Image (tube, rainbow, N blue to C red; front, side):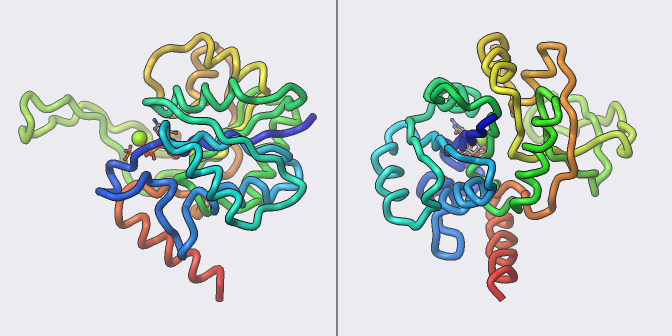
Length: 235
Ligand code: CTP
Ligand code: MG
C-alpha cells in the first residue's frame, strides 16, 4: 500500500504573533513548511506529499517548493486551504489521487518530527490499525475548570483527571485512507485533530510513542526551542 502525507499549512499563526503565515516563517533560515515536508519525505514509505497552503498562498508555496532541494522520489501537490484546520485537511484529502491507501496528516507547525516517529506511525497502520497517533505522557498535572463567569474572573477547579491515563498527542497521525475520508465526510463538530473524528465513528485509535522533538511551534517560546533543537542537530 502506498502512503501519502497531507500537510495542513494554511493557518495564520495568530498565537505566534504578527508576521507571515506560520508555515512560511523561517527556522534556521528555512521556512518551517520546508522542514515539515522534508520530515515526511525522509520516510522511504512516503511517495506523495500534499501541501495545503494558505488560501491565497498556493502559488507562493509552489514557488517555494521549486526553490528548495526535495527528494526526487517524492511527488508533491499544492492545494489552497480553508478557514479551519479541519477544512484544510479535507481539501488536502479531496486532492489525493487514487492508489494511496495510507494517509498521514502532519502539521506544518511540527517541523522537527524525527523520521523514526513517522515510520512507527506508518508501521502501525500497515499492521491493521485504522488510526494511529504519536503520544507522550504529560509533564504537568491537568485540571478541569468551570469557565470564568466574566473575563478575568477566577476559574474554579472541578476535577483533576488521573495524569497517568492522559497523553499529549502529536502528528503525523496515520490512517487507513477510507476511514479518514469517511470521518471527514461524517463529523462536522469542531475538532483539533483528525483521530478524534475517527473516535466519533466508534473506531479504536491506537497510540505509538511520540517524540519530544515533534512538539508544535505555537507560541514565540516554541520558536526559541525549535531553533535550539535545529542548532544541536547541526553540530
Ligand atoms: N491549519 C490549516 N488551516 C487552518 C488552520 C490551521 O491548515 N485554517 C494548520 C496550521 O497551518 C498548522 C496546523 O493546522 O500547521 C496546526 O494548527 P495551529 O498550530 O493551530 O496553527 P495556526 O492555526 O496557524 O496557529 P494559531 O491557532 O495560533 O492561529
Ligand atoms: Mg490554530
